[in-house]
Image (tube, rainbow, N blue to C red; front, side, top):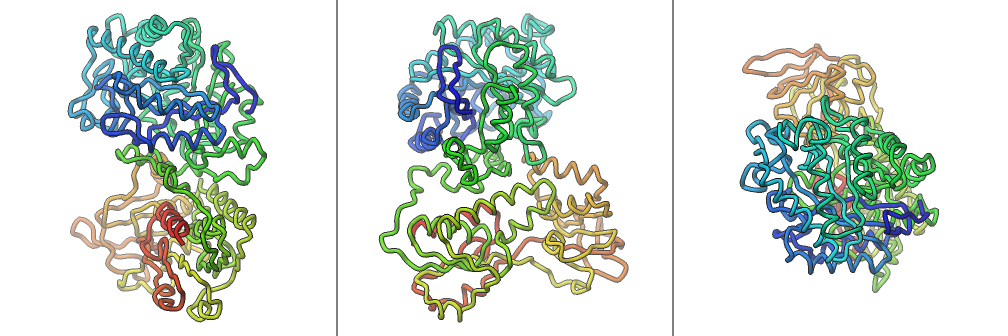
Length: 634
């Protein structure tokens, strides 16, 4: 990983590349902000070899969403110069990704329907948003737009450009048989489908001479009739002949998004077999992206010759010092990305990027950990995500910290999450926190329940209550029967469920419990009065739904639970009552805050704070963010 490598005439100090990932940190006009600079500088300081900055649209009709970076006009150059200079100051090379969203742009983002090689709609927007087929004259206009964008990149101080030709975007729609139904010189056979991309490369060479050019390709679309590895190999060979200096291998489109942004259910380094096949066919450097989250995985890919460079994406969002820590052999100090895909999910909701575990993402200029002016004695009640992060930050600032957890282990509900299929990686987060608290000399007391009396006895300067939440159990007939349990009881293996199970709920926990039980051959039915509350645009949610459906889990929506009886559960659906027979009834209706300790401890400490789910039940991101902010100010 830490050997230098050349891309054309450009030398990188190591083989770790930060791939382009949109942030929505730019202005509405698409110009660079200080927030954006701070974000990239943090990753440059972390020791990466090259940063390919986020997708920069080359034409107004190619803008993929709000606050996307632009390189379509000379007005973008001053801001981009500041960005590249800030990256270069840390010995890191910078490349610009030249991008056009094509058919995968939401019509709302442009206030018009998007353009594409052919009028083949993107599944995300449905048949009501057929893209408009580009004319020959418009293709020529775009050729010039790409050429001028490359010229601006060089003038802005970039060391290379990357042309995005994968993932279902505009250039993909010319390359892939799925997106290209043209009958002119830009459609039909392989050479015709390659023509637009090759002309772009030629136009850039005309304007810049020998300037490093990379192309990001799909090694596979993972779609019937789409690009296969055989087709990708042909494309890579043709690009090498055209003078491209590096091939960047990824996969998937919006229709196969789970391969574009691989979730937990896909193996680490899942695209390495694709890059390996392409690397054997060309004599230029090949990089690979796709769930490379641990140094061991990255090093293995390189050692086995499956790629020349590794693209560390979400893992570098999660821990900006990933390369530095790996180089120093401090792998256990790397905050582990768990492929929750919160970052990507927010982007497709047109929000700025955030990370579940790293609350400083996008706030690098303001979220500083500064030494406390006056060290204090801090007592933290609760060893879940909120309590662990509060303890870590407070200790880093020089406070004397004691963390008390009533159970015999740390992690809180995060520990239960590790039981669900494909969520064992969350255990790495708990291990990370345990390791950090040990290094910071935080005193951890397991089996210790904090009470108001304990607070009075210990007399801490600060008490942070992070006691989390408890499952909501509604008051309906039969709810206290012995065969009624919560999802947390099931995941915590506190209860042996029967052969047939009804789960009441509509969110991730309900479906993860169904996944856990159906994997053990239980007959599972999910009932909910609402629609399913999972975002299936998130690849984890999509594959979770697919797994439970494949195993025959029955999902009943618009179903009102009325009573639990000896025989089963009585529900009302479509205006009729019916009995669903079952052995075990599982409640997964969300949580309620556990406020008791906070309420009873008021007036017993100089400073008293409540953080995380004991204030408002939510996801780990909210709990960690709230506790991190409190620990930064005490």
